[in-house]
Length: 312
Length: 312
Image 1: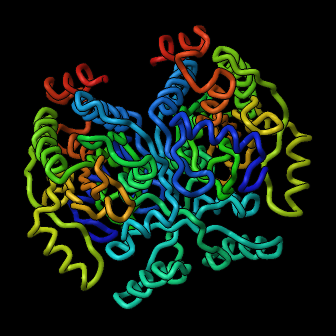
Image 2: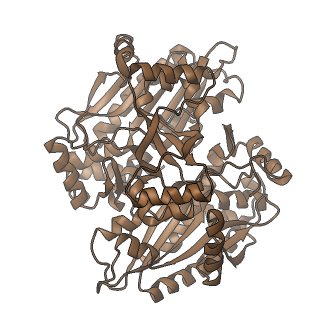
């Protein structure tokens, strides 16, 4: 991580994005409006992914960017990533408290004191809301289940000067639930498919094992175990940081979510799950980095793939 | 407002939505996953709106669902709607604090104490991030500016048993900035256009002056002035509540946002602004209420409009 100022390369790329109207700054690191062309590229890449997923006939539910905090608790998020969590707090008070709030804000002071925790938190990973929703339908069918959740907004509390590290961004997420072997096969298939997708849009990617940014001292052990068990893989592509940036991740959860949310196989055993997420904005940024700020000057093969072949 | 339980009609409609897979419950009032068909209807209605807006050649930036809290302060939101605000808080602490957090959660206790306010809040109205973004570009062109922000997620802290009152929902928002007369003309045009749109999808609407849900005792005066000056209009349609529900609103802000954010006309005077928002989920719900839970049984004219004529 490069801190709130960002490296020289990150700062330069951010300024370029702003000059070309792809990012619209709003006064906070990692929170930008996006220009029309940026959004067009992003949605066309998403459509490409959707078209590759279509033959699997996935179910396509959609979830909003907040979840009940009990979902976060059950998922064990607080153990692993308390520092990234965005909890939604709201104001509770009467007229005098509200006036005090306004006056504090006017004086440039903090005005969070009268706020208390609501029942909802921002979604930290796009697959989280899917687990309780599927669990409560009853046992999985034989052969399990595949979900295409589409692009969903997720939040990470990590203000950064790196334009590829946004506080709120889209994960294009898919989830597989079933027997361990089915789930691992699916992940394997998608590592290949996703590599092809990135190659077809002209990105220079590498595939590697990876770890999540676990919190604290205990987190080091968790990361070590995760790497040893090859639970997480990432596709990385050059954006603006000195090292390539993760743009897609493939995560095998073993029975973690299955047992946390009570997801059962057709015969009542605990289901295994895996998910994969394309970082929708990161891939769009990687495309601008690789092919330039002007989409009209992008390679014909990439333009053809995104603008002519990928509407589902 | 009908409270967290909802009226009998609201409860019944919510159960019907769940039975048909249009809403996926997750344990919190006003927070639901949405089924594939629900999302298909919603996105097709959005495409219809987008196609009606296209001849105006609007700019189409997109903004994420969080904004810097200074945007909220400048907009005067805290004065009017402190009770609806969702502020994002995050955990600050070391290993021992994190462990305490996890243990509190495990005991079913509140775990919000070590959380402090971040620099961001949830977007309360989809037009808010547009004002500072436009202001910093410099003066408006002659004739002003029209924005089509598309569907954007907004948050309101009002858990409710009414399925039409979600905590997080899409506003399909458009904004006009310019001379007072230009802005009012645009609002007038869109009241007509939006009425036609609702008629074309078979909704039985009414148009009325309206007021915002201002906070506290002072709020009553604000609402009275707003109604007298005809600053807010709404289109209402039957959903599940005893009274019709607002599904589209048209808001004239006079110079409120222009002076708050320093938006200037081509000659340096303060710009006037107006916005309109289609409640994307509410309209989808109104369609299911009017035409039934099975889209295959919807009137041919509505199906034709949404599925065959409205891809932009």
